[in-house]
Image (cartoon, rainbow, N blue to C red; front, side, top):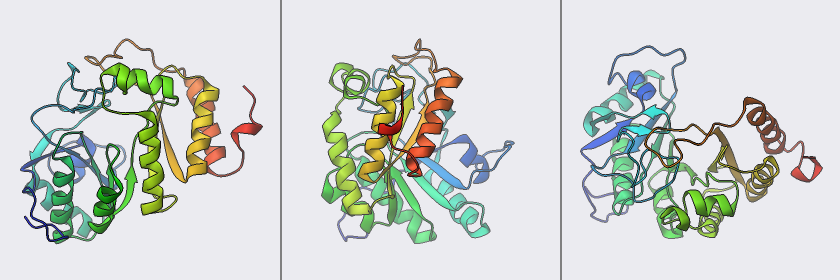
Length: 271
């Protein structure tokens, strides 16, 4: 395939993983849903696992979890052509309003994403998001030129100490706290404020103050922080880590709402 910049790169991946909910909407499998998702969630496919080693993730290189798991969601693989047809049909029917491509970390992942983007855009016009590891400025610019309008680069951990322990050097992972923040800042410059997001997971061992301070840093940087509750997955390093209490998560959800809406700053909160 020749992608939009005219440079010859790898062929569109033959297989791609699709979240179970998305697969049902795309008519790739049968099932019942209480609420139909309007975003098709895809996950890049490879025979092995991710090069990263995040302690909470079933896709981590040392994880013993099932290969079709990401968080607590199942992502079965399908032939890419079948998925592309499902996306085209669902977008034209108004059932799918956005496509989100989530990426494992491996050497050819950017090429796989670019080829998949081209394949989607040849069939249908739909907003596309990408969630991936930190990329260089030139790589981010390639995604913009290929039609990506939003990007997510997950921090996951709220503090440098936890980041290093759970997905950084102490976990045997390739990531560095400051490199993630640098990539987020560059992404904001390229995509614009409000079009860059990150993930923050409540319950990895942070204090509520530490989480709130990082949420505020994201908001001030033009990055939207998506908030998630930690879920232990069998086979991961953190399989025995307890989930956060409901009261803790609700407090942080409320703080997140107030800060992302610009109603309150973390300096005005007491802990």
